[in-house]
Structure formats: C-alpha cells, structure tokens
Length: 326
Image (tube, rainbow, N blue to C red; front, side, top):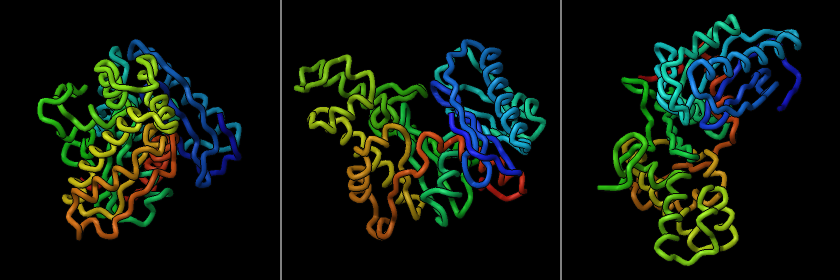
C-alpha cells in the first residue's frame, strides 16, 4: 500500500490482472494511494464483490482527504467490450463471464467509469507521462504471462474496428506451432511470453539438455531469468529465443506502421534479458530506412502501468479530449 497527499482533482485507476487487482487514486500527476488485492474469484458474483470492496476503499480514502473521485478508468487483461462496459473473459477466472464492470464501478463511486484493455492502458500511461511523451506513433510490447500489445497512431490510441487492435501476442509466427490460449497454433505468445519461456526450458530439460535448472525451476520465468543472469546457458538461450521472435514481430510492425518508438514492458521484460536481442532481430527484419532513427525504450511505469494509464485515460475522457483513433 502506498499513500501520499491527495489533491483536489482525483481520478481512480483499476488494473485487473491475472492474479490480482490493483486500485489507485491519481492526483497531482502522481499516485496518491495504491493497494493490490489478490483474488481467486470462482464466480461473477465473487468478482463483483471484490471490485465493490476495492472501490469502496478508494472512495473512503478520497473522502478522508477532502476530495471525491471524478471518474475511474478500468484496465483488464483478456477480452473486453468497451462500448457496453462489459468484461467478457477475464484472465485465470473460468467461472467469471460477462461482468458489467463499468456499471459496478460507476455505481460504487457515483461518477463515470471507462473500460479498456490493460495493454492499451499501459501504453497510454507511457505516452502521456512516461517514455513516449511527444511521440506520434508508438508500438508497445507487454511481456508477462502472455504477450500484450498496444498502438499509438498519429497521436491517438488505435483500437480498430472491433476495439481489439494491438493483439501482438497473436501474430502467427510458427507453422504448426504450439497451441495458444486463443485456440490457434504458433502465436507469438506461445514462444515469447513467460509461459512460453517456461515451456521451452521444460521441453529442453526433458530432452536431456544440460543445465543447473531442475523441472521445479521451470515453473517461473523469473527463476529462469535468475539462472540466466548467473550464466546458465539454457536459461540464456530461452530468453534469446523469445527476444528474437519479439524482434521479428517488431520488424513486421515497423515495416507496417513506421513508428517513432517501440516500448517494451511487462514483468518478464523487467528481467533485462530481452531488449538487446529483440532490437537486433528487429533491425535485421526491418527496412533500413524505416529502422533508421527509431527508438527502443523500456517502459517507465512498471507493474503500476495499466492502473496509471487507466486513471489517465479517465481523466482525459472526462475533459472531453480525443483519445481514440479507429
């Protein structure tokens, strides 16, 4: 939990991740209050109660500071219906479906609420007040349990016709590859995510590859990263392989969109083992003219990025500013 002085104008941000929900109050260009709540919701009702409790806490904190929540942004991994304000398929919650999250949150605060994909929120945070300030065209890769993506095109968050643009993790990379959670085979996410890295090491150990790691160590990409930093060749190979595929995907997007910057974020990216190889692979696959002058940057906001971006998104929408490009 983190608390600081809350100013007069306050917005809230909610990040619904794979294992926890992060709630923040954003005021005076900073996080004024933050709390994380782990969850294992088995039903839509349990999940709704968790959200109501978290929003009640935020509202109480704001009231105690002599202010009120003007609006709330909600970022969520998985599929969301932005127009209806419905969370369709939250991650790691098979019993939770079609939650009217915007109605729940706005009802708890008495203020407007807005729903968006978490990767879009993370990039929005970087674009408004992080490493991508002032850039007109930005691509973001968010590498964690899965691979998320988001796009800023001509100074606006690009969401596309159905609102799902930026699903970089589902770019097809390998013919007859591993089965992805989306139901297709060979997606980038099956190779370059934390789960993909774990699976690669597990398979290599089963084939007899030499390593200081055991099968138990393959349950966490963070543990594999620790081995890589300590010189384990298999662990290093796993991250280099993931980074090469991320670079190939980046090259495809560079050749298509001609961006100013590529931002890399997410828990697995924070290992520091992806950027160099990713950039090299992107350069090999990009047209020289389009690669010239492009910036690659690590995300400024770490695990608070989606919550911060959600709050900033709500703030700008409340001001009537144009955020989206279809």
